[in-house]
Length: 500
Image (tube, rainbow, N blue to C red):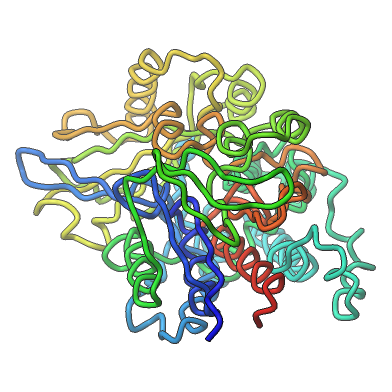
């Protein structure tokens, strides 16, 4: 009986787990090495003890989109996803607080959303929303098959007959103007412009620089829907780990890979501590730029080119255990800054923590009451931040906490006296924990036309047998996309090994 081909996966984020599951199901022998004590990457979990009891938090993504990506993964592995993970539709998807005092609930239900816009903003803008949604759906229909579900840099795949009609229609994907230009062509009310301009931050980019093709993101949320995972978002990582292990994947935690080994042409394995492990293939779930800086020796030109790419924005997270409940807030909330153009200027150009940040608050205890003591709430408070550039994050942390509390107070929410437990995650922590390039959350930004469509490929162009997955490689950052990147990389390995 022939020996199984051996794949080593570097990193246990969702992309690495996705690739490991598929490879094991395809018949490969798979080992996965993770530097931290738990798998999941940025999707992780944290607990805080307060006087009232224990608070539980997710540390990363707080909203799930494109649930069919997980349905397909689990089905491929022989498991019905709904038997292990309960995806709960979130309505409203988000509650928005504007600096003029307006509060707006956003719904995936199109009729409810149109009704909300009609009564809170204006009848004209409600009609414009319908036009905008049709526009975003058209971009999704044009781009999803090629840019989201196919390893785009594999040109031979794109020349297949099924892709040719889509390729001929690519000029219609609105890549030549910015997100902001497109949004302002549909909406005139500055509140709705601010709302829909925020979506490029979902992949770490600026609406004033990123191509309008990224208006695909609102369709994913409003057209397909937003979900929460019963028990907490980290349940996804837990069930993916269980599935991987059930398929025979060997998962080793607290095991940072020091080097990816190769002879200049072909991969040979990895080094973990002082020990070397041989492999036929290596699937790298580490940040592509960071991997070339620290793990992959011998390709200075590739390293130089990758380091010229702009990193995505980073973030600062306050985990607050609140000893009281706030009925004016829902599961997902955004309190907008009063001058968001200046906010983006400070983040992306000046590379400093903004004076007046937009505040995102996720409260999973609104859906899962056991995540906070009775009568309390668990606040995950996220602020967009610049990537690492020599900033003093200790000083910024104190300044940002004050700015958040002031912004909340201006929205009529007195939060400071309710905080009884606190933990903070800064851009430096994101780098230290996950080795994300410059502390970025989403890998590489999409602030140019080329960056938006030409993220680093899933197959190494330098070393045979080396593959990449995760938010810094194709197709990009975000929960469903990194899972798809693991799928693409696994399928490329399968093709190279002659495994269907």
